[in-house]
Amino acid sequence: MCSSIHLLAIATFAARRAGEYVLANLHRRTDANAVHRLDVKHKLDVEAQEVATGIIRQAFPDHVIFGEESETGIPSADGYVWIIDPIDGTVNFFHGMHWWCSSVAVRHNGKALAGAVFLPQVNELFQATADGPALCNGMPIRVSGTASPELAAFATGMGKWRSEELAYRLLRAISDFAQRPRMFGSAAADMCMVAAGRMDGFFESGIHVWDMAAAGLIVERAGGTAEVLRAFPDGCLAVLATNGKLHAASRDVLLPILCEFG
Ligand code: IPD
Ligand code: CA
Image (tube, rainbow, N blue to C red):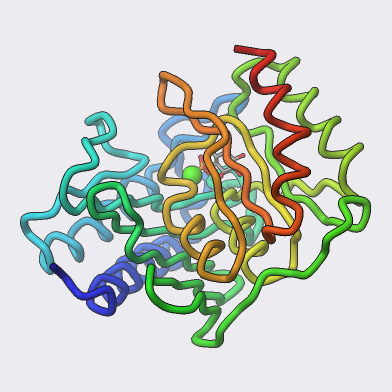
């Protein structure tokens, strides 16, 4: 069994190096393979995933590694599986916004053991292991204590719509439920804001495992709750991450809407 400290060191090194690689190539921010209405397929996404993969492969040659840019499907949960999101918030990055990050997590038999999320332009590094505290730039972080939904700041996203009607229903529900919905454009970074107590909750339907694998662990280790409310057959997930106090109430609002749309 690998030590969680060693796994975190490699996850951190891989996330940092991927982020630094992208940062060093800021002049190429519009150098995309394809720009669609709902997404940007960026060359730097592919290159940064290679940077992270090289670091992990050198440390753990036998482990399975995959990420947003992998052409293989999501691997089985057996053994050690590394999960990379080279640029989470690619649309932000493409437009010159600072809110993007590189995320690396490692799971063993499906359980998250370590994760790192690095925001190069904000200069913040979030980390956690399954048996240690969540950290931001080396300092312990904690979720907020907000218990009233009407005082809760909720981050959300409408990245890749499963159905436009569903996306608007969910946004409306969050807007009615919380103090203010916020849409920053990087699920992993937004979840780290929940971990740090700057946001009280995060919800998005239509994200993927690479968007939330590291940040979900960081939220949990900061005292919050991260839950996949629904896993769709195409691999998309509906993920709710909160400070814990707001979890049941927000789940009760969102889950029936998800179920209604099949
Ligand atoms: C996206 C971001 C965005 C979310 C999308 C994700 P990407 O990831 O996390 O906030 O709304 O659903 O796909 O494509 O920038 O890696
Ligand atoms: Ca992503």
